[in-house]
Length: 301
Image (tube, rainbow, N blue to C red; front, side, top):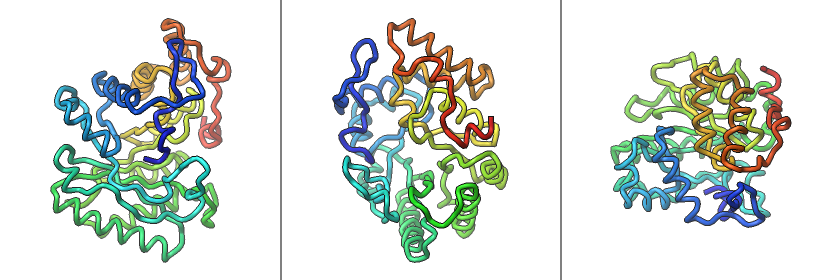
């Protein structure tokens, strides 16, 4: 819903090499089917239109995965090629109509972005309040995604995690249990702020981590490892998984890292070994893929 035609990622040949063309929706849906049937994921988050297709086929009835959809598509996730929407404060918007969605799924994501600007943020939380009333009336559930803003909002980067944590707890303090999110989905802003939020009310405020940009394979394993040690209990890694050359192998190794069966560097080497076994030429050489490129992760290794 953010990236339009480019969302499925690049089309790949049998050797896993990416072409200049993007994969089609049919290929994208096949990737979702394969992952759902793998038994490696607990939740499959898609657009409403994709979930409708997959649910009508009986995919979720035949697999242990719980389907979820994106309930809203605020302006700050509009990323058409050449667009600049992400450079401006988020504007509330919802394409999904809940009575229609309820026919095939009862769980979804609602996202907000705080801008540290009272007029903008008031509109954001009022739209979220109206959504909570509607989703509760429909007997549906939601989880709450809170993005880091993509532009300067006057909060120093080292303090962004605290700003977001305080904002989440403050805005949910006046919400009854029936309207609370099932869990959160937020960016990793460092161990201190993540531990602070994850330990605040771990029975009712379950913290999940978003994957963000693709990065290196070491970034993927390091992020899930550091987040788990900080108290995070859910990982939602869309692009990191979808843009990998072997998504199912990547997720299997992510689980091994979370279970502390493999170190992050060992998982990278294992992943490259699996690519080699399948005749896939790694897009990134092993030495480079072992590097941690994310500054926040680098600082805490």
